[in-house]
Image (tube, rainbow, N blue to C red):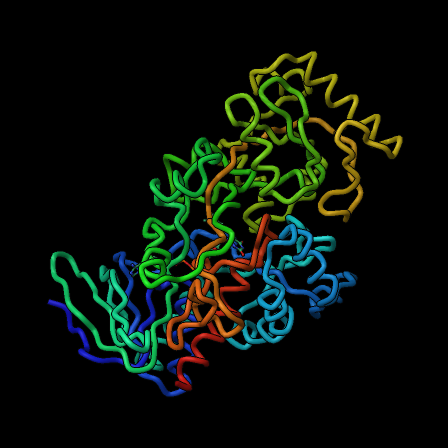
Length: 461
Ligand SMILES: Cc1cc2nc3c(=O)[nH]c(=O)nc-3n(C[C@H](O)[C@H](O)[C@H](O)COP(=O)(O)OP(=O)(O)OC[C@H]3O[C@@H](n4cnc5c(N)ncnc54)[C@H](O)[C@@H]3O)c2cc1C
């Protein structure tokens, strides 16, 4: 039998990064807070993530000689979103991102060297050890602030007042037991996305049928369903995309980090026939879409020893050496040998690499117009230093980046345009931020930014 409070000020649904940040702020500002987590452990997709945060204009960038600012970040976000992102929501990110970077440092977080990643016109990925952040927040919540966390407790229904729409409570399920908890201030949905709901992926993302499924096991779109039941508006549901660079083995072994992105350090992507098929400097969401069109929905990121030597250890998507040690890399002393490892025609792959190298030397790559490492930044090297490597890469549905429409305070919006006064959605369950594509590091960044805003706002009700 669970020790369940009959009434609480703030109920947070989901113990990932967004839920933790929301709970932290609400509690810090004086509210009594309960977190319900449907699995037996906290973490969700956050715990599986690479720990990349997108910030601009930081001291770390400055120290690495990178010129960046909020205007450049906003421009890149608008481009990545393909015009679908809600400008007011993006503006909140821009306004809060530097303060968020500082806040994470005050929690004791140390960022590794800034990296270039997807949809960034300058390097602005700030990597941090994500489990350390979650452990730090967990300890503050439970040990310092006295926030209660109920595991294996799924919130299954929101209970609104019929006249005002104000959420008065929630219906929960613990094992076979159902019970109601009254809520006096508000409910914060932090349930993550729906990368683990086959039914929702079939409904909203039929084009991703061949994408590898990943993400937290509890991420089945519950928050979206509960919002929909009250008439909530959804955003960006038609643009769910996979992430390129995902090893196909991830489908059978969810415990490891499977995303590697040598393309953003100068590698190329070829299909099973040994042919290039896209401009590799695009956002990895778009690379994922292109890969789904290829035979077997699979690509191979091909790179050389120079790129291997330059790759940073301990930064998951660029830690190629650890992937090699785990036996995930195909390799060969010559391009022809690599082709044999891939299973494609050696003459075809040699011809692809030779054409690409010649084009890079000439400064014009006519086949797919690649002109940079990522989003206009960085000079592509030739692939000429043996041995050569290939990372098998599928499109992985690791996150869904769409969901409940919210206002700038993270309050859920009804289809009639009004905000629910005391219902919030934060993190991956909220829609309207990413639009058509995705910039690396903004999903975790937005968990912190909107989680904290929701926690502060609800505590004032
Ligand atoms: C492999 C991988 C790498 C990634 N790398 C990055 C990265 O480097 N940078 C970046 O910005 N983004 C990254 N992402 C995306 C990012 O990690 C997620 O978007 C983000 O962590 C989502 O956080 P969240 O708090 O919204 O949800 P989650 O962390 O998924 O937490 C949601 C929690 O809610 C629980 N829950 C769900 N329904 C209920 C319910 N009904 N009742 C109670 N509990 C419920 C779930 O069990 C889960 O624990 C990555 C994702 C993956 C999978």
